[in-house]
Length: 300
Ligand code: HMG
Ligand code: MG
Image (cartoon, rainbow, N blue to C red; front, side):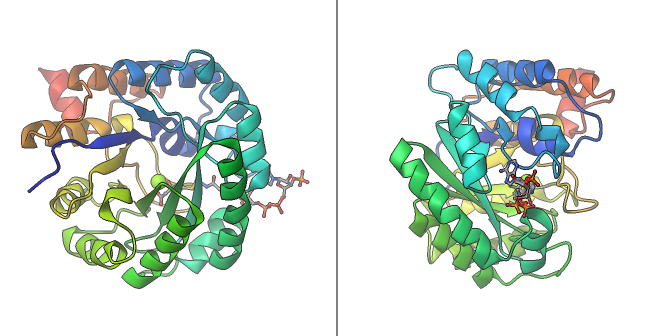
């Protein structure tokens, strides 16, 4: 049996726009977030407090978060990425009430993405989770490369489970499992989830699947059947990852909503407003929305 309802975490403003070559203005980012709220999304990852030398696209993090929070919608969460204490302090100063730390199940990806080993990264996250607890800030944890690594290839499900369990033990309320390169399929995702679910309750897991090989919707369906009820998605299928060459965007939010509407699973998100938002942000970037659902709905 499938869950009755799914929580969608919209990651387009962060995971999507961090990978766009052209710089998008803070005005456009804030308007995108306002449109996503209006479409019914209740969790919108807003920006990341990482080094602007590494990811210039998120260099306006303080401005964007401050403006978004100044007109925050009741009941909506606006998490931001914080790789270390420096990022956490900047996020807190801008008013963040939810942050995310991001680790990986692959040593090489950890080095390329955050310039340290997996063990070092976990040591850096611990003071973030402690400071967050003291400040009453919620922390989400990511594990990247759960179904393969751009540098190492196959990743053992147990390596994913180990990092996920450590993040949970540190106090992350939810662990988002990132198929960073979109190389997973329903069989490999199920094997990975089976290992992780031995150490982390399924109610605290989220699926974060990139759609590089077009398998993300199938992977979500497989995860739903195993009880996962939280999925990350990006409006219009924006994005990718700057440290995973060739990786395409997250699964499109409108594809996820179309699937869940069809399955009778509640999301609280309106497909029409979401597709309009996909068309709007894609036009800002000078292109058509990437997702099949947006194209089909707009063609009607
Ligand atoms: P580092 O160079 O090892 O850091 O970078 P450091 O501590 O040695 O400091 C070096 C300089 O960076 C110093 O400045 C620090 O102040 C500064 P300088 O003295 O040279 O002028 N610095 C910072 N500046 C701003 N914000 C900070 C910060 N920390 C240090 N938080 C660091 C380490 C993690 C900062 C760097 O590697 C980085 O920013 N990496 C970018 C990571 C990133 O954003 N990746 C994309 C997001 S993850 C993702 O997309 C995957 C996900 O979607 C899930 C999935 O799909 O799998 C989540
Ligand atoms: Mg991602």
